[in-house]
Length: 176
Image (cartoon, rainbow, N blue to C red):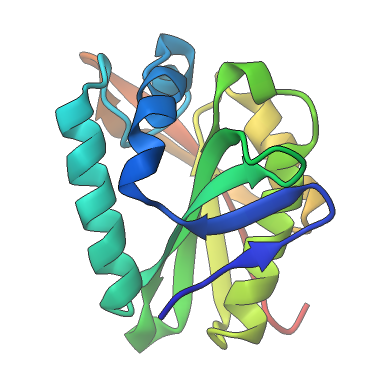
């Protein structure tokens, strides 16, 4: 299944090999890795190739959607977003990241809102949830802006960079 979503300022489309030259420096910034759960640092071309292969498998295998986030005006890659679905439970985890030059411009909110709408309307999900590290309050702001409810803190839930980290949890239901 090919998923392409357009918003006022953004184009969300499946990842392509041609994205790698722009992807590596954007996602490779330590500031990006520090605010995300699954992005390694340093980030290499091999990491990007593995990520693109896995994204294609997710998209084609019905396990969710993994999309590149581009500016519509000039097709500049600015980040990535996705839903990892669990069909048995009719829910999905929302995840996203933006390159540092694109922070603070509302792109994460715009992309997240569009992907959540896609999840509820096209994938017929019942629940979508997301989390963020406490040291990334901007992500919590995005989640609240798109209508998610704060559900609590999972203390020392994740082990990253040689320490345990809390995770702030959010969620929303299709009926709300």
